[in-house]
Length: 178
Image (cartoon, rainbow, N blue to C red; front, side, top):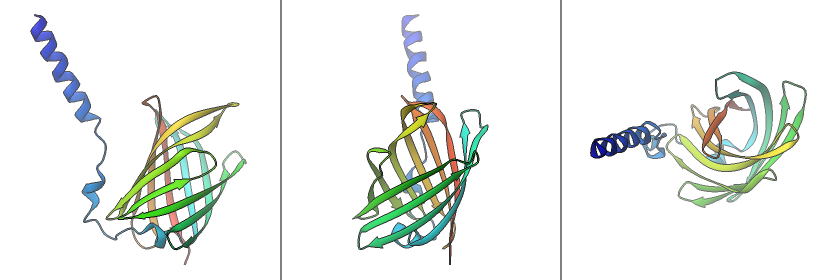
């Protein structure tokens, strides 16, 4: 009986772990158009997005205007947010291209640094954001995925979690100005 219980437990754990496996960046290697962050995030980019909670309910919508520039391998993404409740926010990302599609990024509300990679049309990066919530600051982990659709449009989906518990998602559509 103990052996059967142990085997059942091991099988359930194996099924649960494979069911939770996320997307792989390597599956995008051949996807086109190829994403070069230095090229896409150069100039002005507009974005529209929503925050959804764990049940999929929209909590807040927002727009962003991004003024982006690069000097060699060093980039600045200067973001101005306007939220549906009328509040505003500024975030300035400082990115460094480290070669072979690898990037690191820093911003004032990012704990430590963001680490990411591009492959094909996709960019994935992970970071911890110091997020103000009802008068407190939560350190929330982001698993952020961007997909270049064409030279002007990129889609973005980011999962938010704390202590490994899924909190919700941020979904955005970017459009690069011509």
